[in-house]
Length: 122
Length: 122
Image 1 (cartoon, rainbow over the protein chains, first blue to last red):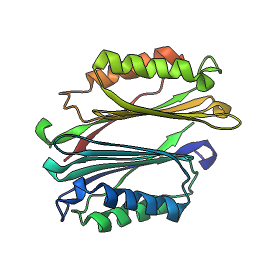
Image 2: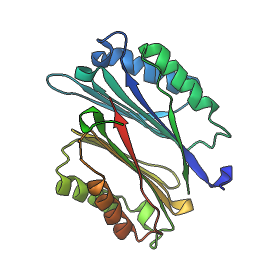
Image 3: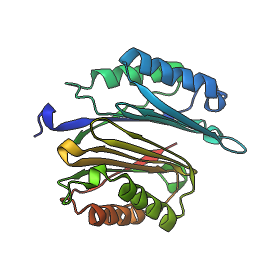
Image 4: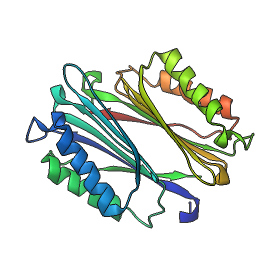
């Protein structure tokens, strides 16, 4: 229905569940390294980063990208991380997002959950 | 399939197209007022805000919420705004998000686009 030229980008949503190491949702350095590695590999330009540690637990990390945004919100009490990546890149298919999903599953050793990839349109 | 207690929140995605006033995607104050009004009405606690003005045009505005995040990315050259709201609130249905969608359609005078509302799960 839509050509690539009408696509404003892709949105990747991952619900990361049953993480093997239950410390991971509290490990801000590990999570930021994971986000940094994705940005480096796919050449997403990070314009700003903000984070918040909740009491007694839980983290939010948000990267403002030249290509839009990447976010993580963690719920250690549920051993769960919500991951989002929206970029305005006009990738011809879902391969890059499928690779990023695979990398995140490996880094978190989480139960496999299929990614949700949404095409956004002008 | 899932009970509310397993729901980690809802994610609202809106592609805002054909905005009646083509200045709106460049009007950072108007867009932030719209975001602030949503936060006030639904009692989302804003923990941090970041924004970026692109050259020659385009804006990104990100609110880090106690309830997760709200983002806007604008593409004035396409008369388009990408809106996202993810909250970890366990609303029993989509009514709040449907209201927010209606408010945004009114504020932007955009062509009606149905909202995409995604339940996220632990």
